[in-house]
Image (cartoon, rainbow, N blue to C red; front, side, top):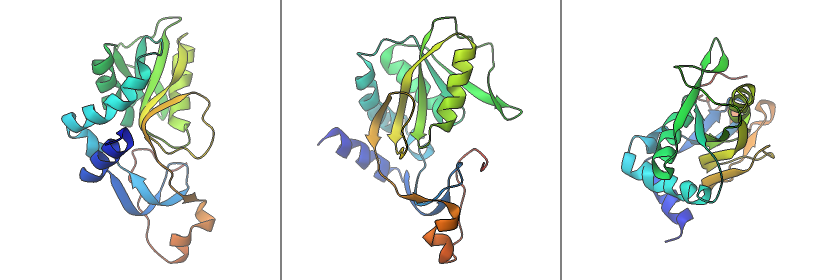
Length: 190
């Protein structure tokens, strides 16, 4: 079994891959959604999947893993556990991503941003801004699923890369059919 087959099997068996009509934080619509919380509820399965991304990071020099709340928190800790690195998280305060809970990023710290799913890189960029403001350096992004359809500013290491079609709201064929949409993510629509 290839690593892609292993990861895809885990995503399918945990019900992580959803079908329907979804709106992403960016406002784009799709008929597929990746709900990684369903995978992450099973520590053994999450460990197997994230081992694929962790293997890719073994040759990458970095000091710290920083996950944005919500999706990147568990990913940061599991990657940290597997790679023997500390994992912390940033979270929103009054809508702005912030470093809280006495976490610190020292000047020159080389950071990997951890995510569950990378789509547009918006949350990663908010996290990168916090890292840079502390004097840290963003080395790249590690995630479970890379489903980006646009270029991402940093290198991305993922357990799996999935291609999923999405549309601007005014071009969505599901809206034109009158199919109601759901917004399953933790962020509000921009």
